Image (cartoon, rainbow, N blue to C red):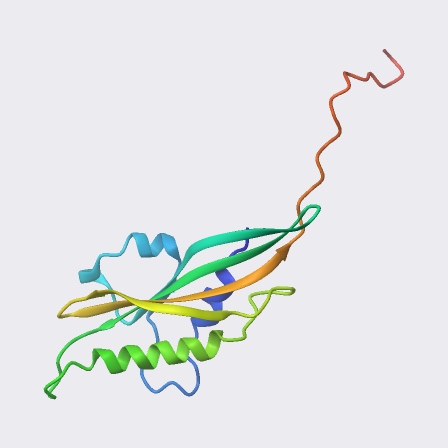
Length: 160
C-alpha cells in the first residue's frame, strides 16, 4: 500500500557527522532475499517490510500500522586488539540510522517513525547481521466506492 522507497532514499547518503564509511548498499527486500554473504560488499543495509496491521477508521478509511526491519550487515573480524570490533561498529551504524529515522515521516500525512526492537540475525567469524524493527501508522483513505449494481445493458447513440 505504501512504497518504502523514500526510506531507502533517506538512508542512502552518508550522514555528515558519521566517522566511518557509510553503507555500500541500501536496498529493499528483493535484494535481501538474493544475498550471498561471501559476495557482499559490507557494510550494507536492507529495508524489509515485516507486517501491516489495520484498524477500521470509518467508511473507506483504515489506520494501517506498517512494521519494517532495517537489516544492517557489518564485518565482524578481529583486529590487533584481543576482541572483535564488529559490536562497536554495528552500534555506530545502528545509532546513525536511528538518529535519521526517529520522528521522520515517510510522507505527507504519515505519523512519525518509531523504534520498536532489535535482534541478531546472524553472527559469524566474518560478518554480522542485525535487524532493528521500526513502525509508523498512516490513515489510508484512497479506497474507491463500490460500483453500482448491474442493471442490464443500456444502448446509447442515434443509429440503434
